[in-house]
Image 1 (cartoon, rainbow, N blue to C red):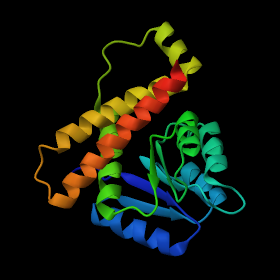
Image 2: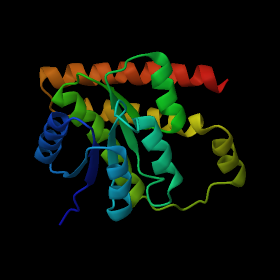
Image 3: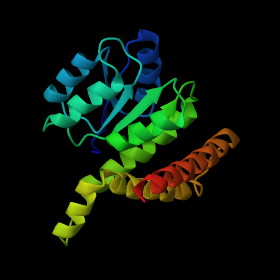
Image 4: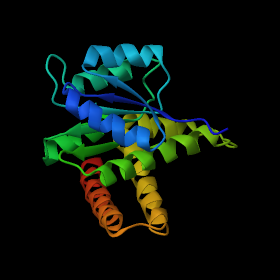
Length: 199
């Protein structure tokens, strides 16, 4: 029996949580909701998650603050995070990726866009879970990633673009094809943005 992936969704607006829960449970994921940052952090210490969808604009603790706390705790440090926000500007996008987010979704989004972005990240998570590492990374490689965290994000984005390319071979409707094209363009733009800051 295939193990279902578990996703944590974090948003202070109940209607957003209901919508996200519906879309993701329909896709077969196990979904747990949190309505604020403290609840989200507590959930990650009590459950195992494969992915977190984290709203940025929340009272008391915004998404960036919650993200830093998640990364400071051993149990939640390696859970990939997709930021969801109504903000759409270059500085916030770059900040999200500099912190270590794996993706960034701007509201309003379509269910198709959300499904594809989540599916891409979950597939990457499952690949890493099942991958047999035959060669240990060199110390110099680890050091370069530690000194420049954008390098790992850059590599992940390249892998995401490859996943999008593979999805093009699947049977998709017109809306899904348009969404894929949009996501590929966005990934290309983010890669350019990251490279310009990596030097």
